[in-house]
Image (cartoon, rainbow, N blue to C red; front, top):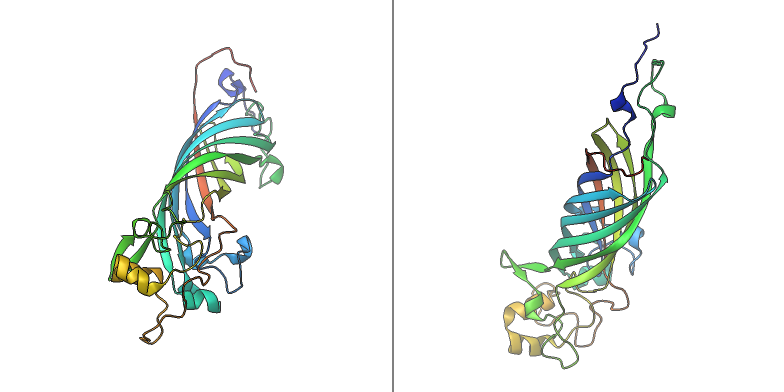
Length: 291
């Protein structure tokens, strides 16, 4: 049997230009701490899924053109890294770990490779079964500019301690090393897919990397300073957090002044993988062209 559908004026309305977006998922961090058993940063090859932490975001999207949209986005995330999770000898002996909140605000442009389906939402015939032909996935790439706040912390005597004020690499003591700022900029980029459930709601998946302009999200970047000197100047807690590489309660640490602690050649990088939900806002007839 064939079911007949009638076309109403409501079916012919254009796509909403304004959309509210929300997302939730996981983060991964690429910096000095944690990572795979290999040497150096190899991005996707260096993922440590045990260090994944949550991310949540909200945003507002505006369709400038049929294939082009602008979005403002606010995200809250936790990033984490630990040398305990790797068998790499250098990283394991270093024995550092951290966590940091990320508060990010970004402006993003999206370009649809496969545009959102635009047609009268009715069928003259309803076919039984599932067909990929009727599954219209809006596929897009994006890039933008953002700013974010971070505050790396490490656990000491069971409490999380903010590391930036301590100067674990001699910041504020060594003339050439100033304390880093906890606000930086990032360049978001990535891709996503979106499927419209009905006229008002859509769901999707989005991956986004963030290239940053700081190497201190994990509080590690350059070389060790003399630990005995740091202990005398800043106290036991700062010295212990700067170099927790003591093995079997040895009196001396593994690393000395000038030994590599991090690699300032590369800035830190983090990424979000999220499931998204979209609510399409209904707007009045503004005379804007229909998509």
